[in-house]
Each structure stands twice: as structure tokens, then as C-alpha cells.
Image (cartoon, rainbow over all chains, first blue to last red; front, top):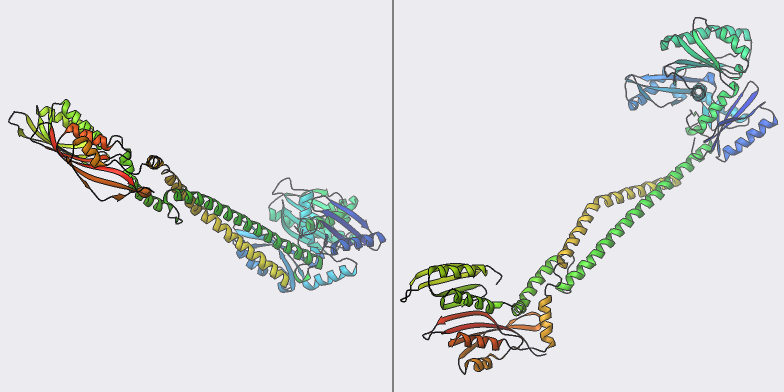
Length: 465
Length: 162
């Protein structure tokens, strides 16, 4: 259904009878009027519908004249919907009794099937449609939708009597007021439609029955042959199907050798208007009244729909932009907050003038400088100090009976010369000094006149100086 | 028709902007996370240095609170502990330290002093805050047993009295 419509009406005026059905967007289809077109009730109903249509609140769908409408199943020999779309007019042209350029052509949704692309096309001569449309307006209604009868009937058949078996051939005979339409297919797939320009409700019934007997054999025989089936379902609808005796007579004229199961739809007269209303409501039908022929209310509705779509896009875009802006703001705040903490932490160490992005480097430089400046304080705080190391060296030497004759000690280096009772005592002192964090090398240059072992120990601090 | 074109153009322009902004947000997310991670790491690193000079600052504050601006007079300490003219004290250039303080160094040459006397001198030098601390020592043998010639390098903090 076009944007803005909540209700759709299906209308049929034929054989001195007007049928009006209404479909709500999400409701069942109801027949709201069945009566004479020139009755007051019909006029009022049409007026009310026209007002709804003009306000853009409802769609009004009618059928293009069946005898002027061509419906064909087209098949392109390649499995590409895009390519097939380019050749549909050429394929349809050979099927039409008039040039394709002079027709309003509508192609259904393509389907890939057996390596080819299949679509159902509907066409009506532009002049025929214009005349029909003018006739509608002259009759007091201006439809928004012009559907194809055969397709409307076939889709309603699928809704009201869905196929039990998918591949089963089936057909529908529409006994209209002034024509008969036979629509045939397999399962849900439409195959062909045939229009007889005669009706059991108009003219000579015997002439029609003769025509029917001949055409039924051709059409149904061809259908069984095309589908390769021996049996099929045949449904009856239309104002002519309200009379069961009539249908029974027509059934008898179907060749007896065909194995056919017959059924009559419930409320057969309003079958088509129900289809029209439903298809307009769910926007699944064909509409010959498009482009320059479009109903002004539909055009306005489309314009409104487009505007709403643009507004929706604008609103969604603004929302997305706002969300992105919010995210950016949030990110900036997160970074700024972290930056403030970082700057404060850096300033606490390196003082003012911290450059953004250079915090770590500036802090490292400040630490290096401050470490240097505070080194005398650390020296002062060193509980052990050089004094402690000296005391330990002297104690260790005394404990090992070592006599120190020369000693030099700084935080970084140590040098001891002296004499010991034995080489083992010198080694012992070396070991103990190593234990105190000195890297020691020893030398034993010989003995003193008293026979004591001379030694020289030199070392560098392996501990923090 | 013109109005529709304007609506269409505006919707299209804003939609493009929205897509661009979203792309920018998505594509910059990784960089944003990296920036945050780097700053977090820098912050943790910098914070790890908090209190790095706490002890030094406490010492300085203590000295300043006690108005202990200068170390002991080494001449007096040497005379008191070693006798007159036993020590040759040579000041070295002061080096500036943190917060207006200086690091002073002196070289002290002691001739023929016993180790005990030397220790007494060092103790006397450390009696007054800021204390003189031994930085280097060199002991050379002397003719007399139990005595030696010593060269000491002492270091102390000092600040000009405010």
C-alpha cells in the first residue's frame, strides 16, 4: 500500500451491479456494498470513498478491462534478473497485438528458474487505459489503482484456496458479467490467462455454452499437456458462479476425459473486488495508473512519503551526528581529565612549564637533575657511609691477624697493602671484602723480613657508591 | 519539485556527514585508546616517583627547623682532638645542592696521628649537625708503629644563614 493509506477499496461495476469491498491494512476484507450503481446508497458510498481518496486516507482499486489487458509469462534464457530486465520489452512486444511503446507495461518480480529468468508482464494500450479511466471518472469515481484482472484473481485464489500440493495444476474460471476469464497455473505459479468475450450472464446462453465447450477443451487440454499432468483442480468464481445449476451445466461441458476436481469459491461474486482491495492494501497488485497517469492523491501521498523519508533520514542523521559529537566530547573530556592528572603529577616533580606530551621526558630530566642536587643529602643520610666501611675493613683485618700498612678507601675504590700471617689469611680478607660488595684482586709480592706474607688488595665497588 | 530537491539534498548531505562522522569515530577509536593508554602509562610512571626524595626533604626540613646551617668548625675540632697544627685543612670548591644548600668538601692531611686520634677527630667533626662525613681516606705508614699519615676528604652540607 502506498505510504499514507490505511484503507483500500476494491470496486467493480459490471452487469448493472456495483460491488465495493474494503480492506484495512491489517484486517480482513469486507464487502461494504453490493447494489445498483445508480442507487442513492451507491452514490453515497462512492462519494464517501472519493472523499477518503482525496484526503489521501484510502486507495481505490479497479480492474483494467480484461479484454483489453494482456498478461503474459515471459522467460529470458539467462539466469540474471538485471539482464532479463533489459529484454522484457522485446519479449513482450512479440506477445502483444499492439506496439509495446503504445502500452503501459508492468513487469512482475523476476524469478530465476531452470537457468532462465521468469516474470509475469501485464500490458494495456495507453489509449484504452485513458478511455477506461475517463469512463470511471464519468461514472463518479476516480481510482488510484488499476489492477490486472487475471493476476488479481490468481492471487486471491492463492489466498482463499492455497494449493495443497505445490506442483498441482489448477485453474480458475471467472464468470463475469460480460466476459469469462480463465486463469491457470501450477501451485502458486501463474502460467496463462484467457479471456472469452462472452458470458453466460449476457447474450445468448446457448451460444456461450457452445463457445465454452470448445474453449474449455482447448484451454484445459493445453494446461494438462503443458504441466504434464493427468488431473487438475478447477475453481469457479464470479457473479455467474452464484448459480450452482449454471456452474453444473458448464462443468458438464468440460471434456469427460479430463480428470478435474471442481470447486466453487465462497462469495463468488465479490471474489474480484476482495482481491482488488487486498492487493491495493498490501501494495502487491499491479497498478497501471502510475507515472503521469498517477492519481493526484497517490502522488501527494508519495510526495508525503518521500518527505517523511527525507525527514526520517534527516532526523536519523542528526541523531547519529549528535551521538558522534557526544562520543567526541566524551573522549575529549576523558583525555583532558587524564591530561590534567598527568600534568599535575609532572608539575609536582618538575615544576611549572610542563609541555603537553613531554611530561615523561621532562620529569625524567627533572629527576636526573634533582637526584644530582640531593646526592649530598643522601650522603649525609647514609648511616653506614665510608666510616662504616672503613671500620669493617679494619675489624676484618684485625680478626685475621692482618697488619695494614697502607689503605685508601673511597665510595668507589679500595686499596690495602700490608702483611699477614699466611696467604690463607689474605684470601680470607679478600673473601670478606667481596662479601661487603667489593670486587677484589689480590697480589702477594713476597714475605717481610719477619717472614710474614706481604699482600696488596685492590678493588672497585660493585655496590652503589 | 524544488522543495523536494532541497529536502533530498539536505537529507543526503546530512546522511553523508553522519556516515563520515561515524567512520571517523570508529576509525579513530583505536588511536584514542592508544592515547589514553600512553597517558595512563606516563601517569603511572610519573606517580611511581612520588616521595622519591622524601628522606632527603625530611633531612633538609629538619636542618632548617633546627637552624643548623653550618657544620662543625674543623680547625677547632682538630685542635681539640689532635692538638694545634696537627691537621692541614684545605677547602675545596663548594658545589650547589638542592634548595639553596651547598655541598662543601675539605681535604684534611693528618701527619703521624694514631688511628684512635683520627677516630676522635672524625667523631668531633660529626658532633654538630650538619655532620662532616668521610668521603675518602688514605692511610700511609709512618715510622712509628700504630701511627700513620692520613689524608681524609670530608663532606658536609651548608646553607648561608637566611
